[in-house]
Amino acid sequence: MARAYRIIGFLLIIVLGAYGCTKAPISSSSQSVQAAKIQKLEADYQAALAARDDARAQLAVARDHQTQLQHQLKQLQRERDVLQAQLTKRTSERDALQLQYEKFRTTLKELLGHAEQAVSELQLPPVRSLADQQAQKLADQQAQK
Image (cartoon, rainbow, N blue to C red; front, side, top):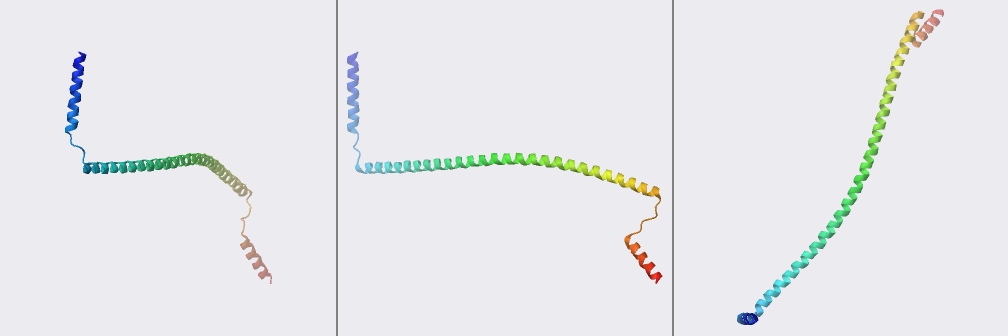
């Protein structure tokens, strides 16, 4: 059996050798074409490397910008929360003051009503205005002359 393997291996080597000998050698024109293809592929590879580096740089810039925007967002959210708390506080203060004002108005109206009632119960002569009083004095002075 070992002899059969040797014979098969020998025949395989002869077939491959014959195939290699029958193949035509590479001409100089096909070598230059292959060299041009290699140069083009190397240029494409260099361009791809440069594009990759640019993309990485853009990604780094974008990540920095995103970090800054997230920081600004957190600051603005804190500021919004503070402003909302202030708004709630100011609204409650306004409502309390409005209630106090309404209470003051009603109390003042009640006091005016009591005062008017007390004056009407006293039956005092009607009150004349200052202009009427001065006009009466002038009339009295002229009548005495």
